[in-house]
Amino acid sequence: MFLNITKMAREAKVESVSKKEKAKQRPLALNTVEMLRVASAALGMGPQHTMQIAERLYTQGYISYPRTETTHYPENFDLKESLRQQTNNPYWAETVKALLSEGVNRPRKGHDAGDHPPITPMRAATEAELGGDGWRLYEYITRHFIATLCADCKYLQTTISFIIGPEHFTCIGKMVISPGFTDIMPWQSIPLEESLPNCEKGDVFPVNEVKLLEKQTNPPDYLTEAELITLMEKHGIGTDASIPVHINNICQRNYVTVESGRRLKPTNLGIVLVHGYYKIDAELVLPTIRSAVEKQLNLIAQGKANYQQVLEHTLDIFKRKFHYFVDSIAGMDELMEVSFSPLAATGKPLSRCGKCHRFMKYIQAKPSRLHCSHCDETYSLPQNGTIKLYKELRCPLDDFELVLWSSGSRGKSYPLCPYCYNHPPFRDMKKGMGCNECTHPTCQHSLSMLGIGQCVECENGVLVLDPTSGPKWKMACNKCNVIVHFFENAHKVRVSPETCESCDAALVDVDFNKAKSPLPGDETQHSGCVFCDPVFQDLVELKHAATRHPMHRGGQGRRQGRGRGKGRRPGGRPNPKRPKDKMAALAAYFV
Image 1 (cartoon, rainbow, N blue to C red):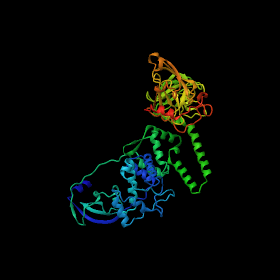
Image 2: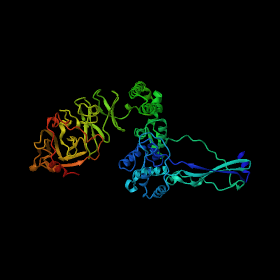
Image 3: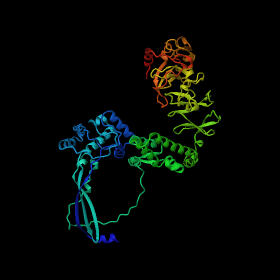
Image 4: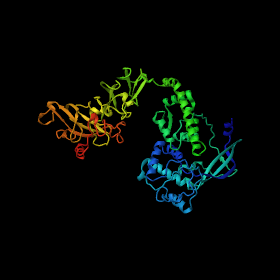
């Protein structure tokens, strides 16, 4: 009815025009949360990635410390000096010079958290210096800093009231008077489309079209990272330092996936997990309990709460919640089984359990693992390689069948006991060690029996014979990714209990077929040191593994844990020396 009445009119008559000058405030000084929010929403960079870049810019001296909750500059902060650093950058040199000549506006008074000053550019940089995401983040930080010293954006807001037939209408427009800080932050400027034509009371305009739009409400979209950061800050979940870690964790654990526009879409696993927590103890997923702990920590910092009392109280709460959750875990299992297959129903039989002697199932989906459905035990395995049964051989300690991990024909491989890999049997072993690092004194698969000599590159590694590598025999470092190929086409290679007189490395017994023997005088057998024996010199080639597995730890290993005493090799032999001339000889074959 109203539409038809309005359609009958041909003119719109202006009843009143009001104009009012308004201002759009310049931004507060930049803190970590705002930087993360803008980086995600405007630059398309995840919070964890943003913090890594910001920390690199800080260590290189381009910006101030990037972890701060403060948005207020101290009175003694030299703003002009930081601004002078930017006078030669072509993107904002004119704005900076104008500010220095006309006078800098004092930044708005923000929040002083008492930690570090707001994030500020400390020296000039170019795109060529920083490149890619480093430059994009630095550019935003610098533009934001300059904007805090500029004037507010001033604009004229015009409100026009007019009548079409019997109906009254209003429209509002904006026109920029002084751009202020929007010169340096153009994405914050007022669009030209928002301006209205000049008119006076009594002016008449023809009506071109009157239409009725039919629309519907839509459900809210998935949260963006920027929206999640805002909500986390609002509810007190995490700090400026831990917010990126929390968001990165839920992505890595496959609770959410990052969709276009950096929207976080919950996965089936994430949804089931949250519903399970709600079913058992809603406080474990609601922000209230985490927020309450953060408030208690703030009270400790302010001297209003006792540290020991807060600690004991909080530990007691979570201990009770943990025990209650364990007692009620069946509720979580029920929800999981609706959306996911039980672990016992997945995988394929591979090796026998040492406890019940039934086959354990190998689950290839990452993280790959072995599961014994009878014992209801799960055993972690090395990742980023292939796993297969190792000759149906068993560990002498726990009777588990060994499996063989391999990173490919060009990489390294080693056997491991699933139980020992997860439960180290000796004090000098750590979780995640295979047989090539096992210090069992008599096991035929251990470091004690197959270790040859100290690695030629890393400090703590031992070169261990790979007994499965024939006829293209090799030994590989049990710490780093060095591989030594030797004795190709040999029929048999074994580590001798005897050691080299020159370097204390274990001697190697090699047996060749007569037709393929490279030994002098058509010999088929020879025993000697891989490092020192001139007969072996042309049969050794040093390489690096095709892939490096996370479990191949280098660097800070134990220096004396390979033997049974200081300076002793596995099996009681002395640790091999590593003379420079021996290293040079091997380096000649480096590929």
